[in-house]
Length: 460
Image 1: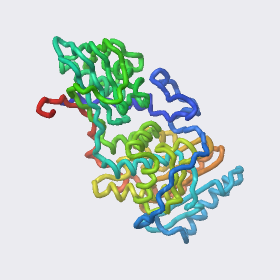
Image 2: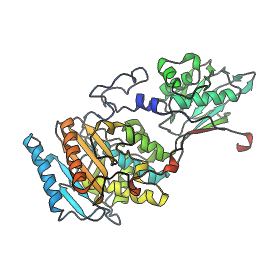
Image 3: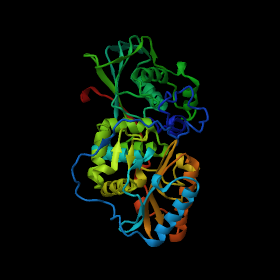
Image 4: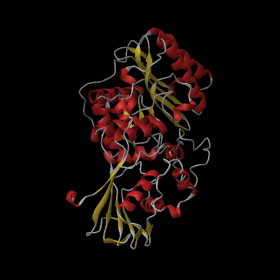
């Protein structure tokens, strides 16, 4: 059974906010406030630590996806040297900057391209690759609803049990839809508790107790906050208001009750679509949840090394989001991650544009940039770090794969300089008017959505 497609963007605009590691995550009570410079979605505050990061095992992968680091194109290297000279004149030394640029088979520019730098949210590309390698693009994360008692005359005489599978994109609209499905099952009131297991997250809250409380609110339109009400107003006209009242408490349990009976399953957006949203809005919680599902930073690094062929010393990660300067990689490794994504996705009739934002096409954090149109890139920022990596389509040289990693307290200046340099390259080789096939998302994925089904007795 399916409800009509629900609208994600109101939720995403409110909650896809990267948070400072020294402050609590943005809650539903404050998420609609205009972000300050330090809490804007594209800003991840610097909080570097002395913790040793995870590096790849000392094993040699089969093949390096990038081109050799010697003999770059003279003209392009000169453009990069001029770019570095401008930064140097502003007091930002060359030792803190890294650049790698190549076509599919030719090195264009290399400045410390094999040296490791803080990657900021470019780290999320490694997380995306590891998640795809682990689960595949069509993986759905299941949230199951169960009961511990009988349903009579609209009343569940028992507990309502929520078992999560670490879906990072369960938000207001999901709860509203689930609440309406519970109504179809004849549940209007629950005499017992709402029991939530670890692994259920809602509205990007990692605390299971708070997530359970938000879910209890979401399935009962009589208790909605202004945020829930505002999100409901974005949904299709005529969408019912769920009215499932929990008479007991919300509590977190380590394991489900022995007598629970599954009644409803909610399936998340497929993984590819989750990754695309994660990268468009650079959401830290989604990235970390997916990295944890893979097995943590160690596994992300291992899978990145195996897929890209870069030497183990060129990637070091301590989390899946890039939030902290100990998440580091070389510019060459950043480019190799995109090449590995391309290599993995193409046999599946997908491209990097199915999991990374397309400039000028996708809403998200890149809308404030002046990057070449139709580029498929991921940016990253910390207080003293600005990075960008991905593919730039050109007429003469095809796709230019680039990574720029800047260090120093000059975030906006670095972004502006990156935009100028990348536009210089597209002006030199010709901007494209339409995305090439290898940088075009698969149109068949546009209808993908979360879904729900009532569990029949035959399925048990």
